[in-house]
Image 1 (cartoon, rainbow, N blue to C red):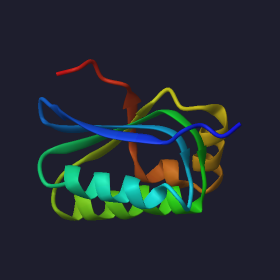
Image 2: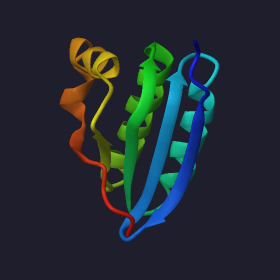
Image 3: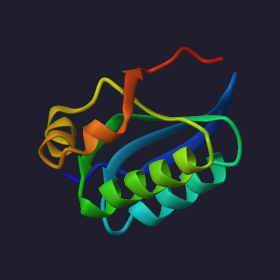
Length: 109
């Protein structure tokens, strides 16, 4: 059964927390990319992917493109978990994990 996709941004002490849930695929990756672009305008961007149940190459591209943009503009992008084992394996196999700072999901700030 497909997990419904949801993506929301919350202001955080030093930037934004983007919470993502469900399947990130060719149909939903554009929404993720747009949300990350909006959050990239100030401070650190934390991306909570603990609710993501599937991540395909479109989702990987959205994360990598956002990371590239954010870091080139002198800011940080942090992936937060814990991460679903299937999603974690996708990030490991593709070596995308090596690009990101990773930390636990932060408390609301």
